[in-house]
Picture 1 (spheres, helix red, strand yellow):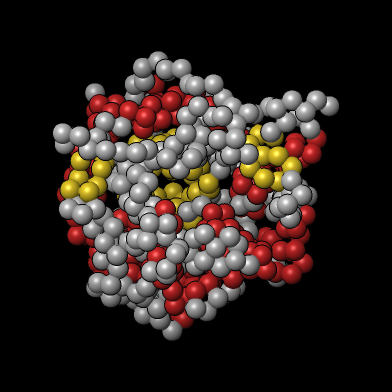
Picture 2 (tube, helix red, strand yellow):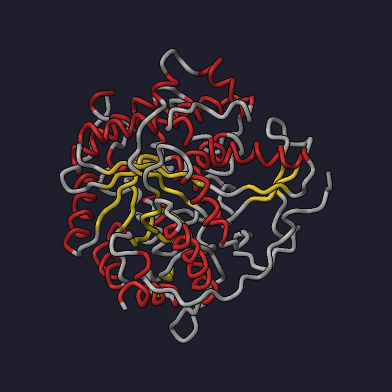
Length: 468
């Protein structure tokens, strides 16, 4: 077979035709997505306990810029004006997460010997009320990576008890807010938090242990389903979903070993969490090392407990992956070919390839599963070098990104794939995890010294798109 490169580069994207809101239909959801630790600040106020990200960010050498999110965007205090700006831009849905340690400072509630922090509950109650008063539909994410440090001290996601701890947290939150909030997301990108947090150590809690990885994967998969069951039990009319980071995976060449490497990476990136939820089990036929979950980690009845009939699946898509075989990456036997090596014409500040048609491909891939009834793009966006000139931020590259990617969302919708909404990542420039404040994904520029907000050209583009 030929070893001709299949995916060395994609040509520069031609300008797409003008895009309007109408073809998406009146029931299509338009929103932005955020995460508590990245925007709230106020990490030591009103009874909030520390999370693993507080500890990680204050550990020397963990954040590239040496920064932390103690203040972040000060959303904890500024949410009323920020939400008014969100509404001004035309978005009708706001995705935010609940800080676990703001609500349960000890990590657990009364069922497991901990306590509920009433000021934390009251903050989110006010936030939800403000959304509703402005005509903004709140979409709550229960877990967006900020495990309480008190639970990490007990083993974190590697401790099987975390499934029960998380179920109690979900129970408390849904009982508190379920009469007002009907859209619930269980986990945010469990693969990313598992691998980056417990295997590579690049994210909190910063562990580097393959031995921990299989239990962490299994426990997050169990929590994904158990959290869904809690929400559905407490809020019978809720719409329950969960989100996955996902990318189409292309082999670098037509050689069989590269094709096989791409299949293994696809199983890890795209199949690992969705297939157990659908009752298909782990993709261990493609990734044999996952068999260790069944042999060493799972208990009787676990494989049945992994399944849950989600109302929707959230896809978080930014770029495609191109991989080749290597002997230097055990278990996967694959490595990613970086966009720079492939002479990709358009890169974001994160070094990610801008590949709009991959949006269509990933919707198609997930949309072909039996049991996936509805899809939302719960994150998509790009970081570019933004500068303020004469009081304005003209981020043309970000406008082009959303414009191109949305064309492929519309194409998928017109081809009868069940994609029903788009949440831009993100509303405000924020603390971008281990990258610090340098990468800016926001539609609104934040001066982190003064906390001034400036709507970027991309924010105005959405405003015109959504309101004209």
